[in-house]
Image (cartoon, rainbow over all chains, first blue to last red; front, top):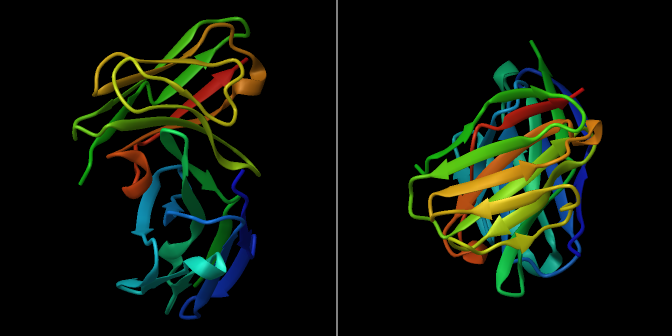
Length: 111
Length: 113
């Protein structure tokens, strides 16, 4: 099945620093989705990005499908960015489909 | 924005108990999913469905049943709950599965004593 590797597993920053989170996957993907999980558990979709580069505010998602990798760049980090970031890869399976999640990257931003 | 709701938000039961988790989406999506999240494992797919009456097995189905009664409603059933099923459960929906974004509910925290 699809294997999804995220790195780093955890990251500690000072406010204002940038972060780069990596996602590598094992087989051809049909889509890549980035999620942010609040410390309380709520899951928020950040990007649905099958290929190329997308921007939202201070966040940039880049997906290079033929190299089986993606990245999430956070610029000028803020304390409110603290939480866990998940990469998920979608792939077809028979008549259905499924998302395979990485184990997450825990980000801590200190003031 | 797609809307997915889950109930209950928190549930405590005892070993051997019967639990039903409910999920409703109001966006006419075809696909619905149940995931569990445990520390160190990310989210793992339990069951999913592409329409009323349909059920597909996910990656960690043991100990779980699921039923899709309507396009909007997807239920996860634990008929003999065990402490290993203590977890955070998420429901999600998407249109046509592979090519569309998945939208997640707020999660249900289940504790089995």
